[in-house]
Length: 168
Picture (tube, one colour):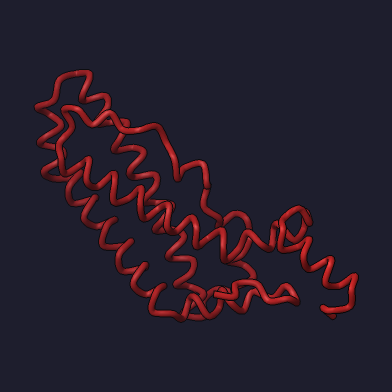
């Protein structure tokens, strides 16, 4: 995926939002949001009532992190769907307020002892999807931010190419 063109355009991102990969990622993300909501409102709520106090606190923390990540995933996917459907300009979707927080891709390992296995599975699925989307987000949009600072290898390479006349 050539995400940023030499002239700084974001046509690669425009191609991505029209791709089958985006469609599959969108479906996967929204299905995970729905599955998690159903679990937390149903079976998970029932299961949490049987946990010891310490495990119930761990459950509450894990479910809050889980829902936070899923909300960020859903927001990112919906912004890109709006671009796909022509409801939002790609330049607007590229704004920093729509970027994922890379710090949320990693949080302390879940102390899963005593937690319902289905919750642990949902946490791991969400963590993996968040990491994947975070990599996509960085590839699609962070080069715009890096260009402004000029500190990444790609912008340094472009500067060298311009200096030696191999890039107009």
